[in-house]
Length: 554
Image (cartoon, rainbow, N blue to C red; front, side, top):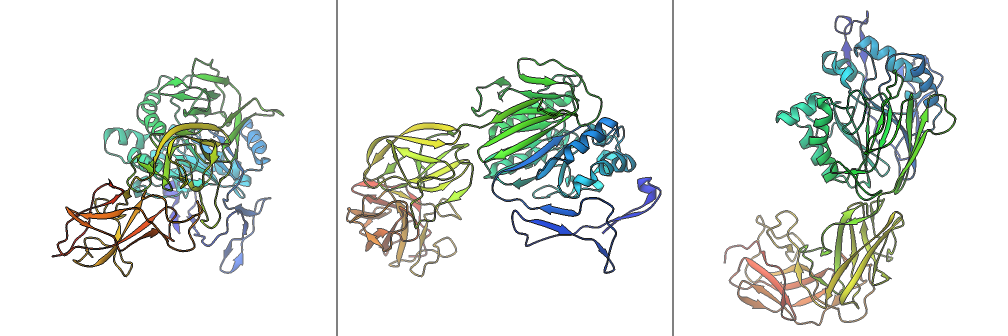
């Protein structure tokens, strides 16, 4: 509970803000709430009950508007029009209270106008320049609770991120936090890069107030250049597909842009939508070579997310038809070579699990059950010379597959998605040994003691101890093995396998396909009496990568 005193707010009365934390909620479920005080329900002043629906997989829609808060008839009528939309959430992108975003104007021009819709749909907001005109936005932040993951406490509410369905939303503050980050005294740009680096969602949608690519009365302001120079490179680096802005009181949609230039549709660029027609008087501006559409009218945007595509519907005040529509369906991209999942080198072997890295590869984040081969994941398949190969994992930036045991030689590997296809070439050898690095210390080999505990610096291997190394690419096992699933029993390997501890050659006691991971070989070997730190596996005279073995005293 927080108390806000009249002397600070200017409202003429003190008020209290209460915050409730809810846990254990089910996805895709509508919850209805009641508020009680001293065990007695409080009278609810709105027509709509206080309820919300939690996020879940599958299609959903959201709204975007900005530059609304002047209390005009246009704002009120547009708010009623928006309230009739059946959506999961709303993005309100700054300048939500004019001219000074005081406690009074925020209450009158934001909460009072949208409260019926707020009772059933969450609003996610950013700060515009008008919010900063009063105490750096504190009156606007006072009534908001936002995610705080990774954000310094002094910046809570100013920038944040959240997931909904297969979309990762990022709210930024293009005011003081951007200035501080550019000067090296703030954390927003570092936070942004870390946040986008770690999301596995297919869609990356970013919203902040000041546009970098819009024509109008504000286009030559310093903020536009700061956005282009400092925000855009990070957004492009991490595959953001859609950006929403406000500030210009107009609707504008760019072509797909990359490096400040128009890129082919759905080729890996960003579409910037300036949607600053939420109620304030509109501006008029003509498009330039970067702008696909420009309309000076009060409006909002409805975005419909359906797996690998987003359809934008722009709805003008009082309009019964869309004033603009656009569909985003980004095509898949492969970045770099296809690599084995152990050493991440392009040395591939028959039967090996392999990783494909890129962008826009699969609209969902899916792992195979490993009891039934997964040949398709949410409309995504991978073909090797025209034949489907088993998928082990599929997501936005990575797909793991198993190379068939019976395949070797040159191959054309094609990723098919609902939005298109992309092809690369692979060279598959009969053997291409590779050791896994230790998940905690990558310079060390992934190996474990006889009791199953991990070998590392805290628990090193001992002389004459029997250990197990994890490897891929050791060749075809003895007997038929189904691909894409776990074997029902340990399947031995008959290839010539030795383990090198430094210059000492040791023949393994047992080599077999693991029952715990597809395409993984477990190599059981006894450590020599004189333990050498460097270890590698050699299959048919072909050596693996070299890693360190955490070794105890000899």
